[in-house]
Image: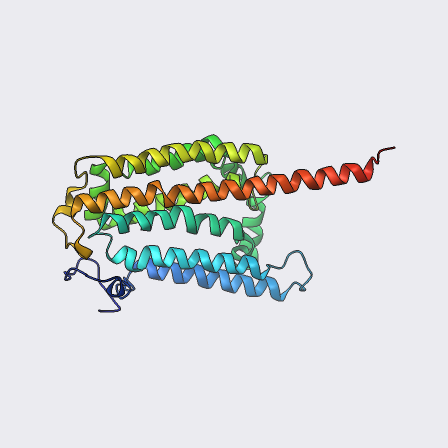
Length: 301
């Protein structure tokens, strides 16, 4: 199988997942953007860490670097990897692509908090201007606080998910490359807004308590599960585009749609449940730490 695949060229139906790994859309504007963003991050990381000692709080830890690189790996596989190369042929791969953008790449990037590295990739005069705008009274900081307000973030996330899965919008994005790019940008952007109140990285820290973050995730889980269940159980083929595409691995259009819905319904919601579990244990750890501190400060008789 070819290592390079140009979107739109014809292909024979694949019959093994080994062949799947040979499909990459490396000749793409997205590849250039990803390489630029990765290069800027690594350059900023080098400049920042070269000016900070190993014990300096301003340096970026290896753990955060690893999270950023994992986020880039998820973006790369989703946007130029086999999932993208075959998304026009199989609905379930398009679903995997969207879940990688929203439930893997976005939270990994936020957990890594790469803003400092990107700031240090800028020339000093531009960096000072941007840093000022990101300060507590800056315009960019004000806008980010508005966009990452929990009610706004979760509404944008859910609406983005539902609107782009409407058959007319979905098929329009498949047939128009610019719309397809916009769709992916909106999915990733909405996911960043959605996860921000959970991760709360600099420069806009989350003001939600752990119980509020848990409730926030539970509220998001229900519409996501409902959409996945509907795509899995509906009797008709919603996305007729897939009725005329190559049948990889013997999956007919209706089976393909049901598999895609099942992926959103089960693994997709497992990610949200997993995040809620992590938050629960962080909440428990925080409460235990506060309890130990109170006993230390106010010992009993």
